[in-house]
Image (cartoon, rainbow over all chains, first blue to last red; front, top):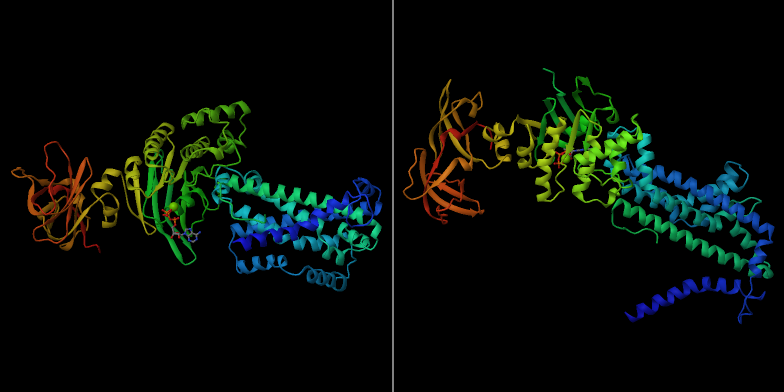
Length: 267
Length: 366
Ligand SMILES: Nc1ncnc2c1ncn2[C@@H]1O[C@H](COP(=O)(O)OP(=O)(O)OP(=O)(O)O)[C@@H](O)[C@H]1O
Ligand SMILES: [Mg+2]
């Protein structure tokens, strides 16, 4: 028992200590990333504001993250809906294959996408190719979240709306959508977060315009820009935590609204 | 005289290989309270969903107000449904739920609000309009579902086991309330239930279903007194079933000999029209028989037997009595009147019955 407790504590330290170091050095008044700390400063954060290349990278990343999140969620809605309402041949097999990118090494996904896009379709690498890759890796998460939202929706609610005279489309708009909305928001937020942080696939598929993680990686060669990266990392970690928390809150609210017990989820 | 409001003619329904409905013919009159009664899986819900428009018939026709409903979707039919799960929209308020079907009507805002309040008042939820629907109790949700369906003044209201999720007390209260409401609004109600007592209490007519067929369609009293088949007899209340034999047959009924009960005359309406000379089954209800007490006199038919089991219910006592010369116990129910002793197990007793209450089933398989 005691050993297990020590293991858990050790594990958490190992997991979170490096992340805790980020803000420490982001506010440290010294160019070298080393102890002892030199004193408190905001200048690295100020430095973020005066780096135009970084701004471009952030904008690229935001564009990609928003687009991928929307695409993955839209496709996820279709898949979750089909899964909840229809029976079709090879259903379990198909759903299983959709989930595979969850465990596939990203480098494999990245390389194979690069081969397909660049060599087979001869497309130019751009932000769109990154969107493609990110939509692919966000889909399993989107589908898992949306599946639970759609599964918890009582089919007779939709039938009741039709029975009361509504068309199928209005039924979807007035009943289905509001009831699965928490799941949709949660899926958007998680997909957004995944895309924003993703490096390997972006690295392979981006053209001349780097995404933020790719930009950060490129900057690592210049020691003097490290503290700025630390500042950026601090912001990203804070943002990720906030987004994932909000996503989880929405997912739970959706469950509460549907009146069912929590059956897990990502957090 | 108008025609039936709903007419089902040879309705068949199969899911792949499984035949769920095997030829349903049913005419339902305007303003009638009809109950579909039957054991689980006999196809009650399926039949209701065919009328509502959620399922297509495999064969046969469904007419509502004389109009063929083939190809008419649920949102275009003059029917409304109260679902077993109530299907009250959890993201809306009570008033928004009730007003849901009025969305496309041309009524003004104030008129709609007045109608909603009226409908809520009708089901005893006046003033609940602003409540969130997901915070209601089961009974309240049931009423919201009812108000939501009734506000559209459907030609037919379909109810799929609307009371099965309520506790006993509330269920009994809602049974009489539903009945009162139906008389008040004059809308045709089709109720699905597997509770025979509920069916007897509420209906004008009951259609008893077994295995995708209607076994008997009759008013409650007739169904109870003259069940047509052994299945129906045993599904509605308790029926003692005894082997017997038709001895004579005439225009004024048949003459039978029943194991333990001896010979009896049976009126034509208590027997199938084609009853033939030969063996078959007779039925008699527990309350038409009595356990006689020492010295008690009667002009009814009498036999002797032994009490095999006594079940005391407070107001009633149920005796299982094995008559001499037979081997199956007969259930007899007795009111517990003051001064009437409750017999012990194993006691010898005389039993009397009203021979007019015997029902003949013919040579149906048991
Ligand atoms: N969509 C379907 N696909 C295949 N079989 C079905 C389908 N819907 C119903 N059935 C079958 O049809 C039969 C009758 O179902 P139905 O729901 O009408 O029964 P019921 O009389 O309402 O029973 P209960 O009292 O349990 O509600 C059942 O055996 C059921 O398994
Ligand atoms: Mg049913």
